Structures are given as structure tokens and as C-alpha cells.
Amino acid sequence: MKRALTTLLVTGLATGTFGTTLAAPAEADELLEDIGIGVGTGLITGTVIGDRVGVDDAINGAAAGAAVNVVHGNNESRNLVRDVAAGAGASGVAGIVTNNDSFLENAAQGAATGAVIHILRN
Image (cartoon, rainbow, N blue to C red):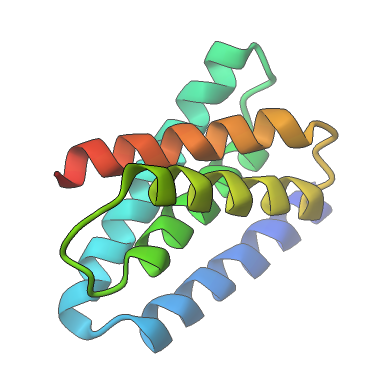
């Protein structure tokens, strides 16, 4: 439990730092929305995959959402492949950090998050 709370705190601090450093105030809302979409998608894909749904799924989704937003930047044209790749990479790395033992499941969750954000933003 202590480890999960520490991971959640560190992830929250990192996400907050990215949000305040990389996003202008008007874009911070979109960053937070993408993180929220990522959390929801992470929890849903965790259920679909048959994994125990928990904090690690939410963290993976949040990381994927933040990465998709940061990769998008101020570019008005979104690219599905780029969004999916950013989500998969960030979620895979977040899975390694949270000691989740399946890199492929984490990457699949992140890819789904990238695709959902892409669809909702276009």
C-alpha cells in the first residue's frame, strides 16, 4: 500500500510538473482532460484484458494521456500513429516503473489511450 501511494504521489508530481512547465495555462485544461481520458481508458482496458484493475492501470493511462498531449504540442493536425505510439511507449515505461510484469499489456493499454484521445480530439 505504501509503495502504491508513493508511486501515485510521484506520478502526480511529475504530471503536475509537466503540466505547469510544458503547457500554457489555456492548454493545461487539455492536458488534464487527456490525463483524465487516459485514466478512464486505463481502467477500462485493464478490465477488458482481465487484469486486476487498480492504481497501476490508472497510472499507465495517465502517463499515456500526458505523453499524447505533450507529443501533440501546439500542432493542430493530429497523427493517429504518433498518438498511439506515444501512448504505448509512455504506458510501457510506466508499467516498468510500477513493477507491472507485462510490458505488452501496458503498451496495449497506452496504445488504446492514444487512439481514444486521437478520436475524441478530431
